[in-house]
Length: 270
Image 1 (cartoon, one colour):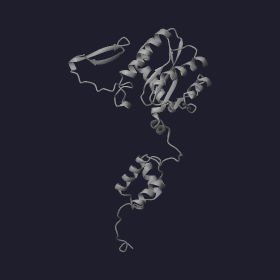
Image 2 (cartoon, rainbow, N blue to C red):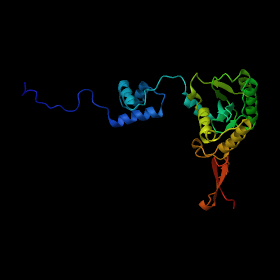
Image 3 (cartoon, rainbow, N blue to C red):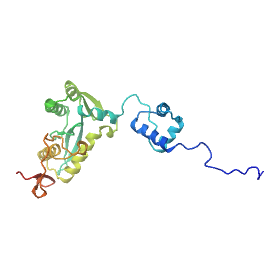
């Protein structure tokens, strides 16, 4: 028996491994087509003369943590927001504690396409009449937009009343409610609130409503006109159409905002 079975073991037992080039092609198809499943990718490979089973494709995708894609009938929430960003506004409430332990409420609106923000005056009692008035103020501010607002995203906070939604719908927009306890569904509004706190409110001792309103008006003007945004290729939400003129480093001057809490830089006028 020893003399008869003299062949050497070559390779690993079982099915031969998939070629690296085919593996990269599977991952490429999955990245470029996130809604394709394993069978759909296998069919596309078969059109190219490459035969790979659905089980093998699923193994490759799971090893790369790339799938398989879930079954769904429409675009994902992220894809929807990106595709409709120019016509979407998100809103949410946030609170500010004053030096006298008084809670003030502010309503923030952000345009997803331009990242422009609008901040309401603060209030102690955000009742239905106050919230509805903020919707009317928003509608007036949006009259000069070239594109109409199609969707407004808000959470299920009870401070949002039916008249608030009625005002938004009267402008031709649809109100979209986020799922319960899902702050990530309103991530744009949550993120801008975190930015306002990190850059302004966490460093300011608020004395009262008037102080808070002045502070937020100043910050909103800085945010919309002077603060670069990565999502806008480092431009500002209200950027001018003309290209900036390069200046010498010696001619750069600083302007203090909010008592030096925020610094803005500009070139000396010729």
